[in-house]
Length: 420
Image (cartoon, rainbow, N blue to C red; front, side, top):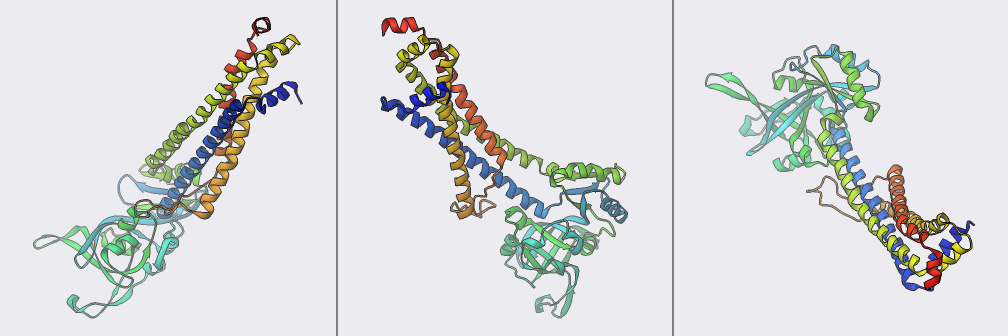
């Protein structure tokens, strides 16, 4: 063993001064708690970001191709060219529109998305989030017997899929008839008349996000075109790509494939840029704030080493008299502080991983689902986060040893021996 390391560890475990040992233990505990807390918070923030991303991408395409001039009239040709682009996994046309959905006196404003039930299911994951019904039922008519106040008789009605929260607000169940009203009316003898059409509820989804569950509805592409009087025009082409984080490059490739302007392809990161930038900023802020805990522990290391230097003045003088250099003396105290920082960091990493495992395994922290979009704390462990935190912690502890080590190295043996 290197003699500087031997002396440093001997000073660390010395029992002659219980008070110094206590401060060393507190310094080690401070580093451990700071590292573990920082790792758990970063894992939870990463889990929240990942959970939100999955929920958003479950109901939104990874790339959306639209036109600055309005709807796409030659969308079939555009769709084929988009599907030929490398990295494109699936593509489907979509019609967007705003409407009101009502049952009796209950009415709510919604966003209507007209999709192809077969091709659209390859682009978005609505079917996976259905709690009742089937997405395939959008593409066919359903026989429904109307109540006497609506004229009675049996009619064939198209299907519609709505969110769970909207279904609760309207008090509607599968098989019931909903009235969908478009704000774009049709001209009549007395002016503009709102366009209204009946649909039968064939599916209810639960996205876990209140905004989607209350405002988003799906109907068949052809029905949406007729309802919004768009003829054979679609609003956009939605695309699923193979590489999630390569969606931006794929979007640029799609623009080149369709001839550029007036087409514009936007990837999911661009559409939700502000949201994910806010998450990134929060993670940086949490990292900085919680690193202060490690800094406090580092100040304890400084205090411990300074007190050890004051106590070991005679030992330092004797070592120098025996030929120890200033660098060797400084290395003794730097190694002692580094041992505290390294062991504390190691214990913090183990404790942080154990805390993340417990949170993920037992989910004992519950959140109100009506406030948050998750019911328990999601945890996502990334190795690079652990490596970064461990490196920062060790570096901070190492820097904390520089001043006490220089003080010890600067002691003059003659002065110490003369007065002590």
